[in-house]
Length: 124
Image 1 (tube, rainbow, N blue to C red):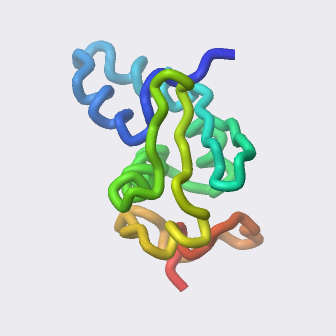
Image 2: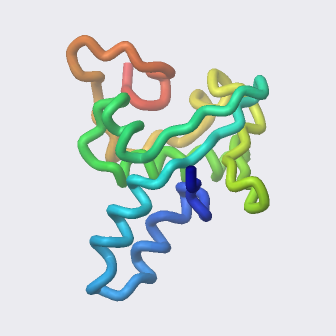
């Protein structure tokens, strides 16, 4: 299995740096790429932007990129280029309350949503 070579918060700049002819292909490749997060407790979660958007019922994958940027901005996540893994530096329950919520996220969860943590993704 091949994992993303860059952290999710760099996806937007990687897409922007691609030639106009390559942008759609680059976007599709990055959003489908597998990424890993070593959780604060040690377990490792594997997903893709496309999969995570489906779970969180986000319509725009760029929203997930913005969420990861917010986590990085407050020092909640870092990236190990050697291992190609995002690393949580604090528990999710803590950093989702501290992070700046991207304005592009939906204001309320879709009907039947049971994803966590709601604090970050949706307004109460």
